[in-house]
Image 1 (cartoon, rainbow, N blue to C red):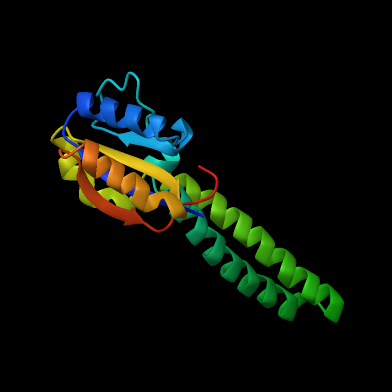
Image 2: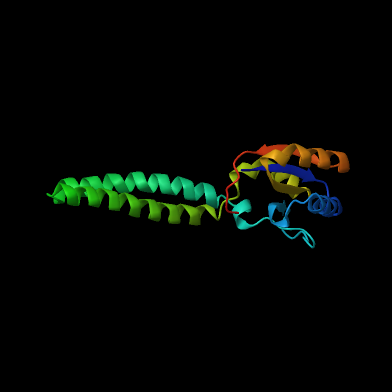
Length: 170
């Protein structure tokens, strides 16, 4: 299980130094992400992906749940009105729930991809002022080690806490 450690860095040069220190501490580059104002040159830094920048994951989760519930309700209505056989009714309700979940997840993830990440919205002002947000995903047993390293080597870094919800795939 990984935890996401968040830091605000004042400029690009200190962000590059923190990247080097994290790599030397054996944190893989694919687990270090930087979020900056649009147009900021990110040479030598691993820029945050759309999964980090947008609400696509939250939208997908929400859409799957709502779509499954609405699909199940619609399937139950169709089964009650048009179908006589109990086995066919059950299959219709379950099939409608699955189709509803897939459709709801697809639609809401498309909407979520156009919306900024709601978990990171309180950093928007700092990012617009030119600061960089560092997202470091580390195993839970290394969180304190990484925090101590960054605090010791980078007093300019502003620790912004931990995000407990790190999806397994990004």
